[in-house]
Amino acid sequence: MSRTVPPLRIGPIEVWPPLVLAPMSGVTNRTMRALYKPFGLGLTVTEFVSSNALKFGSKRTMEMIDQHGLEKPVATQLWGDDPQTMALAAKVVRECGADIVDINFGCPAPKVTKTNGGSACLRDPQRCEDIMRAVAAAVDCPVTMKMRLGWSENELVYVDVARRAESAGVKAITLHARTARQFYKGNADWEHIARLKQAVRIPVVGNGDLDEPHIAMERMRKSGVDAVMLGRGVLGNPWLISQIRDLMEGHEPSPLPPAAERLRYAIVHYRAMVAEWGESRAVPQMRKHVALYLKNVPGAARLRERLMRIERADDAIALIEATAAQLESPLAA
Ligand SMILES: Cc1cc2nc3c(=O)[nH]c(=O)nc-3n(C[C@H](O)[C@H](O)[C@H](O)COP(=O)(O)O)c2cc1C
Image (cartoon, rainbow, N blue to C red; front, side, top):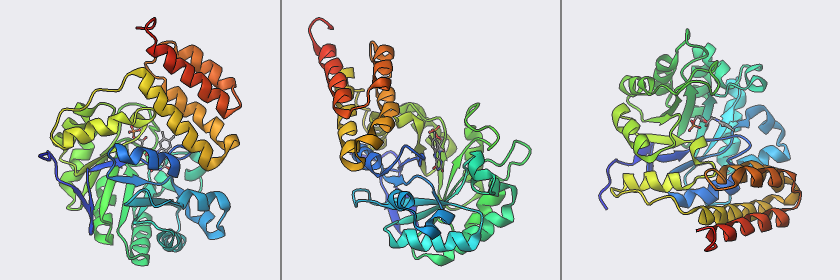
């Protein structure tokens, strides 16, 4: 094996391969992270957690920061607008097993920005700096930060905020190359990611719209980033992770498994979710995951529709299994 890229270094932590699973609220819980990790993720990040909610230790919040030791290293992501509350929350998540504390300056959702959290912090770079300094001083592990380009296209503050991060002791920066006002519209602009890489000495992780292995590697090479982060592209397609890992390890990517095999993996995912969260929480969550595993599967639209109405995990699994068997039958061939 001859590696085509070096590992990502976040303070004393070496991340190999330099391939990071994006935090996705409501999606990347610990079950999914543990399932997708062996496909070749060097680093996983929890869903974002409110620093205010951590003060009260709500059950749901504590579940979100809980790991079961299968992911190492793991970053826990926090959001909030108050430096002292963020520092206290950082101490709590560190005690609960975070190897890295990540700060969210990227979320554009109104329920977060209306209290000046997430991407709204970018409207006040000094506040970002105060938060980063307070968090970095509070914990004995590396602190990282994930941001967007700025609040709007007239306020592209990412270079300023990144330089402040560097001086505050932050050890790596992830840039999702859209503005907050764009939400998920348009394309992530990797030119900005390349510009950020030139502007700071700490590692930069590039993020946005990576859903094909060769393009991901090309973006990484052209922008010069130290790692790439994968979000929506891996949903229902963890094989994208192994394909990029293959390229990073210096060989051609393995082809996507046949549809029946992909569906059987959806069943593995389903069972793991039921085992960990119980049927009533797993079934609604798995509807969105299975819909994504069904991408490019013949007859997917009808199957998706049926799965939307199924309330019992066993029924859903039986239907997915029957579809996989049908796809493998000589008649289907
Ligand atoms: C459903 C969903 C939830 C997300 N939740 C978070 C989050 O909790 N923290 C965060 O920093 N970004 C969050 N993001 C943004 C992703 O981490 C990532 O930056 C974005 O999806 C762009 O990457 P992609 O094009 O590879 O999906 C979320 C995105 C989605 C689609």
